[in-house]
Length: 114
Image (spheres, rainbow, N blue to C red):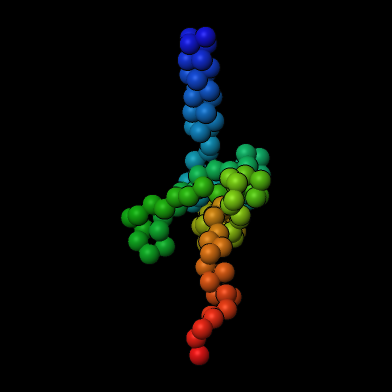
């Protein structure tokens, strides 16, 4: 029983590691906006890398997605843009976790204050 549990754990770790390493990494300046969007549509998500607009010696990267279905539980999509070979601003989506507490604090009535 102990060996079967160890084998199952090792197998699940390998599967998860294989899935994590399968995401495409794209240098955005080497592809057109259409090609970037096509990769996102086909694979669901990709790591997009591009130079910082403020300092071109710094490379920025993030995980971008084709739709909300590629985000984890509790995340929503946010519009973003990355530079591509054919445009300075290719519209894409990325996931983020909204902070609902900030919105609640803004609309919560303040009792006991004049």
